[in-house]
Image 1: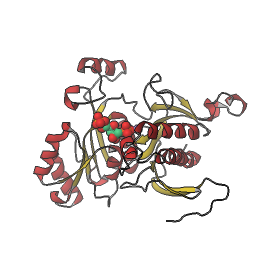
Image 2 (image 1 turned 45 degrees about the vertical axis):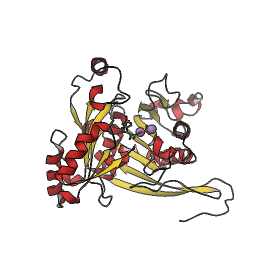
Image 3 (image 1 turned 120 degrees about the vertical axis):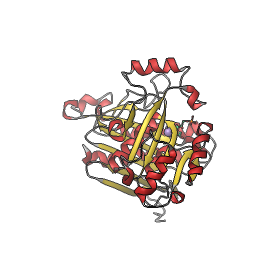
Image 4 (image 1 turned 60 degrees about the vertical axis):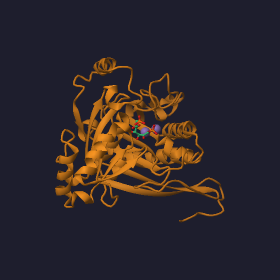
Length: 346
Ligand SMILES: O=C(COP(=O)(O)O)[C@@H](O)[C@H](O)[C@H](O)[C@H](O)COP(=O)(O)O
Ligand SMILES: [Mn+2]
Ligand SMILES: [Mn+2]
């Protein structure tokens, strides 16, 4: 599954990132998002694969493209029977966030990326558009920190696993009212907090790499982003756990449906029988093969953002595979003109 797909998905995230980066700093988050979706879909539909979106832009009615259940890949094209035998291809599931951090792009802030995860059919948890309580931590703390423990206890464990003082730990938390107590607790325990406005996928994955100066992500973000983060962390061997949040009172804002009861019914209808289950990375991304790809839109901890130059652009992407056991940073020069004036190296 990995061979050519690994290369093609780099181009998918690159094209989405380039399209979105053209709207960087323009204050128009919806456009920055829409163009990324369109570019991702266009490139995805050229890949010789039978793909199905399991995490996307939402239900078919609200999202014209990359909606949940949408078939993607060359075999989904109207004239596919002329060049494509679906029986020769394995079916794959895809989770996408073409513009992760739309606000970050719109306001020219760091850390936005085009991102996706791929696995065999059934290999990614089809998370509802709910919130998710998350904890991410470096490989050395895998299976040691625990979402059921308090932040204080987890910081002690992290400090032992990483062989550094609690005061040398940095925890990323989304700046939201729902996290006020969590932030207070982390500070009182002696660790330092990095508050982010958006983009908890990048924060989770940053825990997987030493040198990012991010040692944990704690708090509540969106569930679809949790699955994408889990795919990367599974392939990296880092720690990730997530628990769905179905009670609007906990989140205080947003996208979670009218009531706790209605949300519980929705989970039941999706065959989620234990709404309080804690999922680890292997359960959220359970397929035998898991591939993750991201391309920086604006520069962040992990990747440079898109840099345009006369006649082209330069991008930086990250592809992680649990099969080849690689985390590959890919630096690409894109030539838009047939005869670009220059190919900029830096
Ligand atoms: O910041 C985020 C926004 O993602 P996107 O809409 O694709 O630009 C995500 O990383 C968060 O996980 C999440 O969507 C967020 O926490 C939920 O929104 P909010 O109610 O503002 O916390
Ligand atoms: Mn997102
Ligand atoms: Mn998005």
